Length: 129
Image 1 (tube, rainbow, N blue to C red):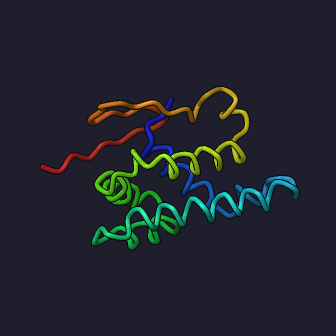
Image 2 (image 1 turned 180 degrees about the horizontal axis):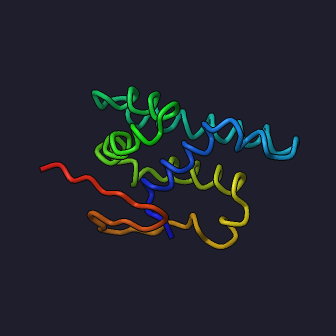
């Protein structure tokens, strides 16, 4: 299982990566592009009220390592983990891009009352005090 913010970040990175979608079979490319567009739109809408939300989202697409912590913070502060539509869009994209991982339950998310939770691959946490 993976936490909602990590799932969203992972899906955004995968969708923005030209090689990931291009590697799919032709019939799946259009579905993946549409799923990414939906995810990107929902994420943009979610962080729109945050001062640096859309900046972080835009920059994350071109420099994910540099902007990952900032985008994760913006998504967290914007309540993205509780946005069922956004989490479902991220899961749907990852189902298309990583079918083996999806079948194994890698992108299943269940978090209730969590705080500072990290689940998944290669986690890094930055706390602001």
